[in-house]
Image (tube, rainbow, N blue to C red; front, side, top):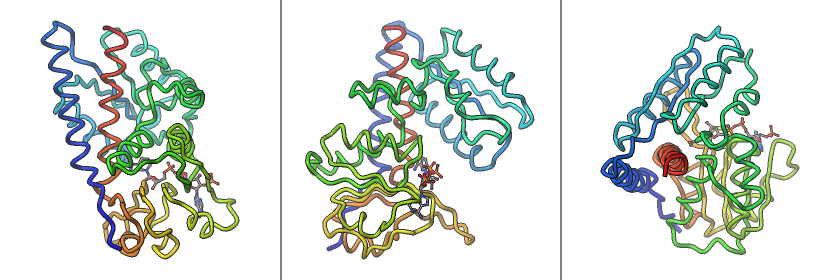
Length: 284
Ligand code: NDP
């Protein structure tokens, strides 16, 4: 079997086109462009690349981006004060704090300070809680983007056995909740899982988000599985690879996301979707 490739670039482009059209409708109705505040602390090179691309995406769809760069040695209280300022500003619909933060700042305290209705990353416990109780609103971008990619295959997900490898707050856990929401039977694996190969072999739908280059070999994968590779790993030779060994996985999977060009562009497109959603709710 040679897997069909799920083209994240094309699906994200279509979603951005749809968002741009909706923003134009807002503007022609006399409403303001949605506003997204992007807060970056320090100058982590990978974060700078992500923030630049998010700003480019905003410009493409007509979202107004308000950038705030703070020095790496800023204290948590100063960062909280900036969040309070954006929380109170009616022209700001979404607030994003680029992670990771300097180690001296606890990210949970920062995330909890963002007003839940402006939490366009979907990381606030309120928004995660809404997903738990099947009332999703602002959904974590990467898992929701991954769901849109799975749905693009046209394969029915209800009743499938889904295995999520990775249990982080921002990817693995909300991913499992998204899969549960569409009727999958879900297994979540993490670093204490005893027999990872056996768990992976049971997956009709496999989502991997561990941050270990090509750790999942193709011969672990159930023939015909749908595979979503969330991992982004830069190798010493500068190549970017996922957490799944792509070439060998293509021989087993029915559908697979590439890295790059799979989940990454969808994550960014969902951020725009969430910002528009937050704006439409605040100022209908
Ligand atoms: P974290 O480091 O926060 O979490 C990694 C998870 O993987 C943890 O739950 C950890 O288990 C688990 N894990 C680590 N090693 C193993 C192992 N050997 N076997 C089984 N489980 C293991 O990472 P993130 O969730 O933030 O990110 C994961 C990957 O996804 C990274 O490559 C990141 O760059 C990428 N990413 C991509 C995005 C995109 O848009 N495409 C967005 C966000 C992340 P435990 O909980 O026990 O420690």
